[in-house]
Image 1 (cartoon, rainbow, N blue to C red):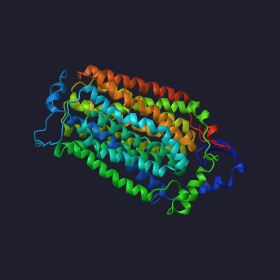
Image 2 (cartoon, rainbow, N blue to C red):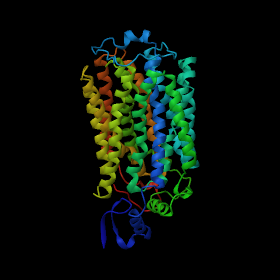
Image 3 (cartoon, rainbow, N blue to C red):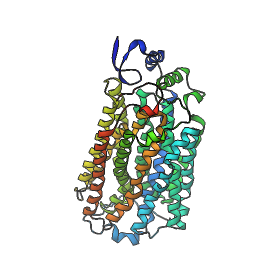
Image 4 (cartoon, one colour):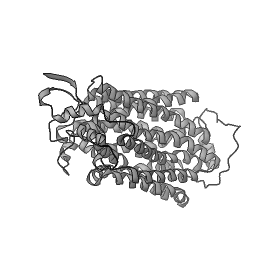
Amino acid sequence: TKIKGMDCYGSDTEKDEQQKPLSYFLTCELIFSAPVCGSSRYGLALLSSYGFFVVYSLRVNLSVAMVEMLNSTHQSSANHSGTVCPIHYDPSQPKHNNTASVYNWNTKTQGWILGSFFYGYILTQIPGGYLAGRFGPKWLMGFGILLTVIFTLLTPVAADLGSGYLIAVRVMEGIGEGVTFPAMYTMWAAWAPPLERSRLLTISYIGAQLGTVIALPLSGEICFYLDWTYIFYIFGAVGLVWFVLWAFLVFDSPNTHPRISELERLYINTSLKDELCTSSGYIPWRAIVTSKPLLAIIVAHFSYNWTFYTLLTLLPTYMNDVLGFSIQQNGFLSALPYVGCAILAVVSGQVADYLRESCFYPTVVVRKAFSLIGMIGPAGFLVATGYTGCNYKLAVAFFTISSSLGGTSASGFNINHLDIAPSYAGILLGITNTFATIPGMVGPVIAKALTQNNTMEEWQIVFYIAAAINLFGSIFYTMFGRGKVQPWAVHTPLSHGD
């Protein structure tokens, strides 16, 4: 007899039942018996989520701190010149006492400081993927974040020494964080069963959204009641706690985990048996760099990040300089867009796996559909934001919708690396993230250069550029994206839902 539909590996293939290996039927049974609550794989998802919370809180805190680090006397006349938006004050709040140093950095210097993190970040993407596969992802990710934590704690000292020292510290933070995503993708290649892939990865990477959601308003509160230096001390301490937990509770694979149940170990290993490459140490570089499905992910990742980093690094500045919000209000309003993004990221993960597992939708259809929603939607609402004028409620609403829709891409191109080449997912993520880091490097510099007078018309240009790049990326990915394991990524017959 022939069986057509999605098998227990998540494939859309027509196979002869008699040709199915014993592991196939074993996996079918284990899917319904492997526990979720208290499982090691979901424990890894939660702890890695905490790790990405640390990563993004250390990345975005400077965006809020920058508003307070500038000499208000020097900046006040420029901050609201050329705009019609009134400054929003909250008279019920007491005036805070800021005893920290302030600096007379011009607009160009501010742009370089905000973008300097990504100059270090881009350097360790591909090496991070290679080293994770060669030596194991646990300690690479652990020490990468620890390095970022250490230099975060040194940020106030560096700022006092001069903008050049601050830029150097931010570059070092970027070097440390650059290995995190490639390392975690390598980790998930050994831990994430195909039919739980979207769920586990969206839980893991929601920490990045939560880091933004919590760090932005909390940084505003810290600036208001203490001073900007405590932003780096407090979040640095949170990062140290994570490193201790990671060191004692996380392991590279189910086979090296001393406390995982045998049932869960068998379920994970069996489900991944035919997906992972059997040639240890072999990397098909030629096939990787000429792969069209990988190029599609690169273009989509680059395009999406242009919009994402535009908001991530410049939204607090826009709130302050254009809409006229104080540092305390700024943090809360800047965080709102990422609340919706975090929610939709998790929901999209559940829906994506449901569509693949229960509705038998091909993997490639699911990935492209979620990518289109997560890229075209944000582009449209970002452009609309530029025409809201001083209606700050509508502006925040459009920012929030734009960022929220972007969360669906977490189940689109964002995890497509694991679909097309799970054995080399870390290296592939390193390659795509290298190109996707470029918007973080040049975006703030270009945006600052285009918005020297902070007029609505200048910001409209910034939003149009981001939207156009996003639209192009979504079209390119729809044309060339794929959802099955590529032939060069494995040496045994398989398919995975194209």
